Amino acid sequence: LKMTSFVAAAAVTLGTLSMPSMAAERVYKLKMAESWTTNFPIFGDAPRNMVRMAEEMSKGRLKITIDSANKHKAPLGVFDMVRAGQYDIGHSASYYWKGKVPNTMYFTTMPFGMTAPEQYGWFYYGDGMKLMEKVYKPFGLLSFPGGNTGVQMGGWFRKEINSLDDLKGLKMRIPGFAGEVLAKLGAKPTNIPPGELYTALERNTIDALEWVGPSLDLRMGFHKIAPYYYTGWHEPATELQFLVNERTWKKLPDDLREILRVSMKLAAYDMYIQSYHESGVNWAKMKSEYPDIQVKTFPTPVLSAMKKANEELLAEAAAKDPLTKEIIDSQQAYMKVARVWTNISDRAYLESLDKIAE
Ligand code: PYR
Image (cartoon, rainbow, N blue to C red):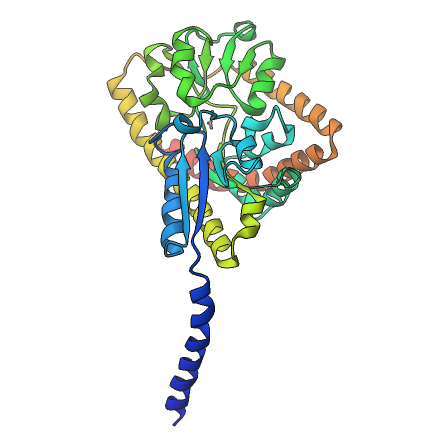
């Protein structure tokens, strides 16, 4: 008897459930603009994976089309297009908007800042997401982590950098806070979208550039025109970004919002893993197939000057705007705690391996 009434109760429950689920069959068609060119690997895989997961999990109720930079022609205009509602979602990098809203610059990566695991800790378990919301909300936008590259290479240079003098007047493509640091040291930083990088370097519009690292640089062909490949200081944890128009977000039913949120988070995390994989594989290839590439690290006095300029700029920025100060303080405080752990875990592990290898 008990069993029968349980089955009957279940049938009633299912019966009542079928009504709203029928009503929820509405399909939400969203448009996304990415900063990347058509079929771009890794950076383009993240939004493609996100869209696929969201469609599958929603059983087709969320349909998102992606326009690449080849279509919308505004790789560095994603913020404006999503803000205006021309697109519902964007996939780009927060520091591309530093000229419009300087505080957006802190949510990609910072020179001499956190590594990817540290920064993910800050985003999801520290105050990162909350602060990013504070920065984007006035523009009717929501921003979510969109995939991490890990530590980036310092870039491709035609000439060696032996002293601070070599940075004076150097025209370099380098976005974000690192660009500010180089400007303070006399260089001429600029941002150029990825689709135009090779030509800019080839035609001497710029003397040097940083893009990502072996995961994505090799196929760009930079090594053919700039043989010096410097190790990184400027972008230890570049996090891309999903931007969502708040009006679109509010229109979505709760379950689709959650599906979108989870799809973005998983696609971002997957890009981090994919970046690590591709970096390892391509680094090995680079060393064996392109012996002319010379891997360098900036001289210590140059790195020290960069660090000092970085600290001065952080202090100046914090003094100008209370929200900037809140973001910088939060990052510094989080890094201080997380780094102690990094040092006694990852660093200690690798150092102990070095010791027994000696
Ligand atoms: C760059 O624009 O340099 C990135 O790494 C996203």
